[in-house]
Amino acid sequence: FSRTEGLIDNLKESFDLLELINKGLNAYLEEKRLFFSRFFFLSNDELLSILAETKDPLRVQPHLSKCFEAISELQFNDQLVIEGMISAEKELVPWPRKLNPAEARGAVEKWLLQTEAYMREAVRDQTMKARQAYPENVRTQWACEWPGMVVICIGQMFWTTETEAAIVEPGGKGVAKYRDKLTQQLDDIVELVRGNLTKLQRSAVGAMCVLDVHARDMTAILADEGITSPLDFSWLSQMRYVWENEQVACKMITACLMYGYEYLGVSSRLVVTPLTDRCYRTLMGALQLYLGGAPEGPAGTGKTETTKDLAKAVSNYCVVFNCSDGLDYLAMGKFFKGVASCGAWACFDEFNRIQLEVLSVVAQQ
Image (cartoon, rainbow, N blue to C red):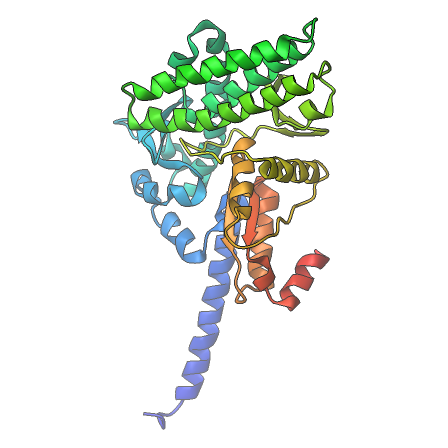
């Protein structure tokens, strides 16, 4: 076999053809990635399996979670038109506009890009409606009627507004009174949790309760300190949600990040400790200056979880990636392209494992 005439030439020719095919495939995939930037976070195999399903949009469903944090499936009607999104916990969020994937004529990346835009639009729409409904309803009833992430956002927004009003109240007793009101709200939530709730409502109220407890504790500290100005550092150093120019803004000290409206489903939230707050302050300050952050500490102390929780707090897409010594500069470049083009955050775990040669390229960029 090895003496077959011209075998080596045939093998060389096949190898050259294979190289050419591989080069063409990579160029094709790069084109698709440039169109829908979240594809940068997928491997070539994952991307090919999505692009292969051009005819039937229903067959793209299993791959949605690779591109979106919390969209497990999309709600299709009988005409295969998308009307809403469903999370892994089976929370349904209706879209203000409908999307017909057939109009993309088989271009999966085209309707996925529209899905991203409609997702943000839907979350913003729900946020605006929930904000208007908050003063008109009983809080416990209101909390069960809106998507989990919207309940948390609006709850924190009204806490910010009401605390600032209590701080400037004449007589200096406003904050103490408001603390008692927050304690009563927590008691109402305890009553609610003891009642008949669906699993979905229980998860949403649980996440809201975690942040409500933190808000009550912080208000109690402000009352004990007797602050009388909303410019006091003890108040400025809290995560504050405000409604500005028809948008939600997240503020902390001098940093201000716009709320991202990335759909996060009904996810649990971290219990906020003083250390979590300090990490938030540092990372928010860095992000305001267009810099990154590098939390360090012993294994299992919650560095990754804190970063992910801050992304949830400002409703941004966060991609967690475990680095290994097999990571080359091309793979890192692909990641940075994705981060830069779609505005996501990337959390690199075990960053120190990357080889020095690759790290030096990253530092130069």
